[in-house]
Every structure is written in structure tokens, then in C-alpha cells.
Image 1 (cartoon, protein in one colour):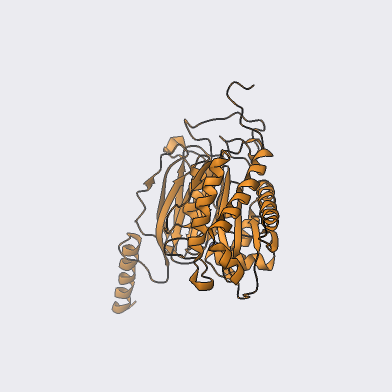
Image 2: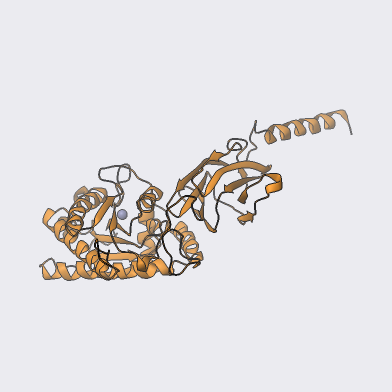
Length: 398
Ligand SMILES: [Zn+2]
């Protein structure tokens, strides 16, 4: 070896060491933008946000090793990712399910996420785009948490600590007015903005539901930006029984008008994918990827309840409007891969209350009287759904 080669080698060794020490970052790797976690009643969600597409290996489970003083843990390697030492000390969680989450550089070209666990039953993981992120939900029995009696204990699809959907009385509705803040949603005839229509409709719907004895939580009650994850996090954290996302449609075909109601299921029509792409703020390719993600999970149990709710609400809407001289085109109950319907375990629907790009629909959606009728019909549909479920036992009732 000649002298210059030796110096090149030493140089490489030094830069490799600097890279490993987290002092510098090699080029061509994606960066970790953020590492976050949310605690829900039944599980804890860990999200790693990257600045490039997620290439994750399998999530592996390791039992606790008391001799080495290592807790039970999950880990996953992310290819082509640089994290350096930013999260090597870990972020404490301490919510009864997880101890902490940390990341470190496993090799020069892959980063490892480690989740240290207090109680573990199962997990699920999936990746999402816009922004690119890996999501891992860890389910378990929260230490010191609330426990309910279980008629079918051990059923894997049911999170512990909460009665199965069909046994749970319907009390709390989470209303999610679509878009807001920086995101105006669709813009229609005369500049009518979807975010304004959905907020106005939500406010009337909230009143109608309170009149009918529901508890109501809204994801936003003013003009603010809210991520799709934050919306579903609200639904989960208040233990909402139903989630109703309000939207208004748009189409290049100005003549197209009408109402359609969506729920989440495994397969979709072409039209649903177009609507889902727009509402998710992603392109068609990303919707196809999301569709594949949804297909990996058994959503059928929640989806049965969501379908029932969608049919009752949609039925009331179409019937009520047509009776009240607001003849409306019935576009039907449909399946669609919407983030807000997927990220929560709560039975959920998404109502597209009309087309902003259609002159007649847009005119109506500006009309307070029309929004009141819409809200009344949606509330009636949700009441009918509630009536089909077990009632809350009155005080003293046995
Ligand atoms: Zn929308």
C-alpha cells in the first residue's frame, strides 16, 4: 500500500467513526424528522416521521431479560435512515404500557427503533405517506388502568379495558368538521370553502345531538389546522363511541350533485378512491398504498358497525331531504380508504354533504335552513343507531 492510499483509508476510518458517533451524517440517507407518541385508553401509538419513504423491516418482539436488566421490547429497523444520536437517550413514556422509546444508528445505513414495554398483548404497524411515517400501536393492559368485565375475554381483535362495540351503549359522538386553518378543503361555486361549510354544519349538528341526549366532542370548533392523526387521537382519547367526519364534495363535472356517505372497508370503487385521495390530501398512488395497508388489517368488526351507522344516517338524510322538498340525488353508501376512518378503532363514517362545485348544491350549503335540515337528519340517523344498541342502565335499574 502506498502512502496516499493509507491516508485515504485513515480518512475513511475517521469519517466512519464520526458518522457512528453521530457527529456527521452520510449523504443519501433519509432523516428522522420526529419521534412521537400518544397514549390512548387501550394502546399507545408510536410514530416515526421520516423525510423519505418508509422501508421498514419486520417488527420483532423480545421477552424481558431480568438477568441483563432489560425489559420486554419491540424493535424494528428502518433501511436507508440516518438518526445519529438524537434519540439515543430515549423519550420517556411511562404510561403503564410503554416505558420509553428510543432510536439509534444500528448500521451506517439503518436506524433502529426500540420500544421498551411495561405490558404487552399485541401490536400492529403500518406506514403512511404525506408525511412519510411509520406507525406502531402497542396494545396491552395498562397498569393501574380501568378494567371492565369481559364476556369474551381473550378475543384478539378486542382491546382490553373496553367493552366490545356491540355491547357498549352509545353516549359520546365525536364530530369532525373536515379541513380548517391552512387547509380550506375544496373550493366551489362563488369561492365557497369546504372548511367553512363543514364547521357551520358541525355547530348545528352539535346542538341537534345534545338535544337528543348525546355527549358531543368536536375535533375543532374554530378555523384551525388539524392533522388527520390529531382528529382521530381526539376520538380515541375521549373514548368516543361514534366518529362522524363532515365534508363536502368537489368534481370536475359541474353537473354532478348529491350526497354520499362513506365507511371503511377492504374494497373500494374507483370513484371512492378519487374522493379519498382528495380528502386525505394525497395522490392516487398513495391512496393505493393506503388501500393495501388497510387490507392488511382486519377491519371487518368495526366496519360492520360503521356500515350500519352509515346506512341509517344516509337513509335519514336522503329520505328527510326528499320529503322536505329539498330533492337530493342519492349517491349511496360507499366504502373508502380515508385516514380519519382508519386511524381510529371507533365506528366511523364520513358524510359528503353535497358538491361545492355544483351550483344547486353550493347554493344550498350556503343556506342556514338547509344546514339545519342536514344536521337534523344526521342526528336522527345517529339516534336510530343508538337505539339499536344496548341502553345505558338508568340509576337503580337492574
Ligand atoms: Zn373534505
